[in-house]
Length: 111
Length: 108
Image (cartoon, rainbow over all chains, first blue to last red):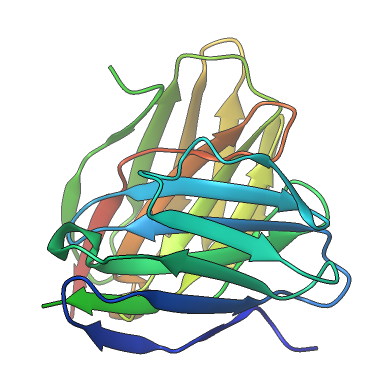
């Protein structure tokens, strides 16, 4: 079956613009996670969804970041008024139990 | 101090060598995970351990719960094993707590 997919794979934007990143989890996976990996850095947790609700948003770095999930499936991570420090790879993962399956990531560059 | 520490940070080996990557953690866990991230960025789950030892091909993962320590071994290493290996723990919930990763380069 299909794995986790993300789009776009690459995004270049200008500082101050809004961006939307999409994640399609594995069918049937109720849990969905967003992570960020800045250049040369480790993985940073952003937000976790169980179904359509987000019981843990503790990793979102500022109120410019938001995420939603609809129909217990697709999720969108939105970054408003992007800043250069938002440049990173944004990874999505999904799971049914404790093992997470990662998507290929969206590489975001803010100029 | 990070809750999950890995060593070494960087490792270069010759093809065929036996490789060990270590992970220590300071919190109670329900499971420990080893992940592999290739240069293209994709992350693959290698193992999930809560006790003992697991083997998959040339990869072996062990965990000692009492000592809060896990090792990932690669036997007969190959250049295609070159990647970043990441240790992560879970604590009865969904959330991965990540180590900083070990960058492995295997030379032909």
